[in-house]
Length: 237
Length: 114
Image (tube, rainbow over all chains, first blue to last red; front, side):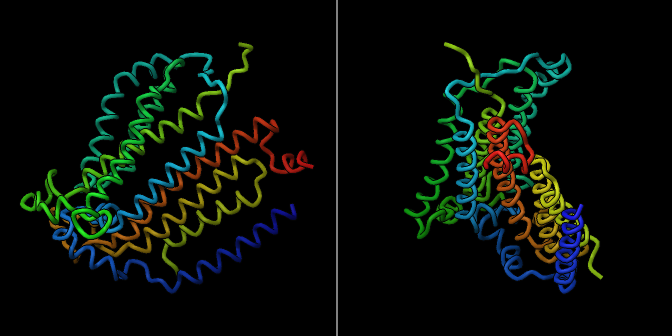
């Protein structure tokens, strides 16, 4: 009880302090400094219509590479911490008829939707990370519905590695052609897609990188799900 | 007076912090951490909002003069992904703790360590 009262007093202090700090920040007013530059130049410099995607992949592409690395390290950590000598699915029963039939019917559409999200990242809200998460959801549904289902580890792990290598390779080609890592060579040097801004084939390397990120995030989250679902079997073999 | 959005974000952060401070079940503490993270994301997004403007996608009539700030949205996109990764890693640690101690109570786990 004392602990609870102390916690509430502390929360009130922290809350008052945060509200006090935020009372100096006006809501709904134009506070843009760097954002204005990005918004005004995004179409000429990157070709993307979606300014958020342009900031994430083009202007701040190196940070996104770091973010993908963090995700990779987390998924490696999950795999390492849950490593057992022999792991198998231990579900006792199949999913219900509704779940099994529904997942069979919905699987291609969920995959298609995920692919749509990350391919159109430079035009619509979304991008590689939400698209990859959507694809991982499709595999999670398969795990829930079928008690013996397992992903093809021999296919998934090389794909994940190749997507990561592909991202770095795109950046290194930029370093070779232009002057810095992740230079947008397709847009600035080759000048492809300048005439169809706002359509699919534009925005330089943003669709390529977001497709790679989508594949990488999808396979990585699926790997995390797979590591968490399969359990150790204590057999005497 | 602070805005309603700031108030909501601060409330979410405080609710999550309460769960982290008071709850003894590790899973409930992780739920609290996730709620805190949602509050921080909402705070960032609402700081970047500008009244009567649209999403920063420059098509169909949106110009640089009538869109909101894209940078907080890009930051939050990053933060959500990192949040998912850290939550997965923390859940993994909890799975290992449970298989070792057969309990999720933080005080029990501390007592077992001696």
